[in-house]
Length: 327
Ligand code: SAM
Ligand code: SF4
Ligand code: FES
Image (cartoon, rainbow, N blue to C red; front, side, top):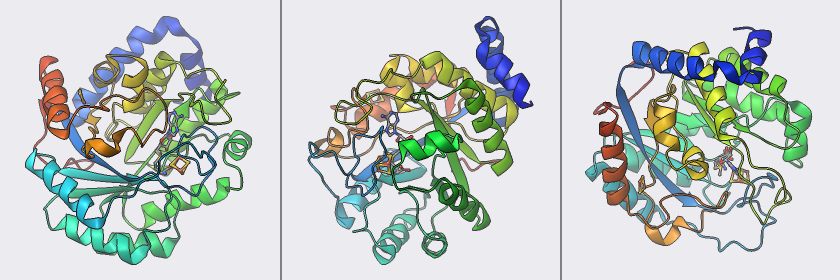
């Protein structure tokens, strides 16, 4: 689709039912009925960045900061493997304590468990990404967040939009399965820029795209901003499926946070991945990127069972392979 077509569908809610059904059909045709589960380990909430929307931003002094040891990360990964996960996702703030050597050791240890490994640890240099790849990491998630350069720069003090883009192209060049995505509902974000976001996913040839509604956090400069709209986020996701038919698209936790059936609705509107939390319970509430996050008191075992049953209840199956794009 071109920009005008995307804008047209995004601004017209009379076509929503058609869009969601069509995205579900294209998902079924291209990636089938299997849902890939990725076990998410939130291993550090320490972050040097100041993203205006995020509760973990360095200027938020009301967060009890934590950092898992390499041993604790391995324990969580082992637990996830025992629960049947075929992919581990390591996510954190931009925490310089985990330098290249430390990260590579952790990557190598996790890869011994015969899993696919995804990293989501922010902007790094080409050399750092290269070292992670050589240590065995398979995928990397780095959302562009918004392709509106002015909005990007106003949301990320001191950060460079050009560097964000460069990081994504570096990841692609290094052979990572590269994930990106955007926030829907940032203050003063336009429908036109959401259309540009989808065109950007296509231009990058993203292998994964995660779309989430913006949820205001009380300890950030955006505390009084309006929450992103669930249905608009779902439309951006469904349009992403139509335009990149064979990629992996998660039903995001943020969607379920603002709609109690959000992940299942997303799975029936184009998504084929879910990323349940496998972080130990004592750290869950400290990783508060936005308020109201689901599963704060549910163990990895409970979440695995809960989401597994939900997926089966809509006639879908749980994948037993690594879930690479086109596999
Ligand atoms: N620090 C890494 C990064 O920024 O790429 C990974 C962790 S970060 C918490 C993961 C994602 O959380 C971000 O890409 C952002 O889109 C999302 N996020 C942060 N604050 C949010 C908010 N208030 N509402 C919804 N999503 C949010
Ligand atoms: Fe840090 Fe990521 Fe939050 Fe930005 S979105 S403040 S980089 S954890
Ligand atoms: Fe965590 Fe349902 S997925 S309790």
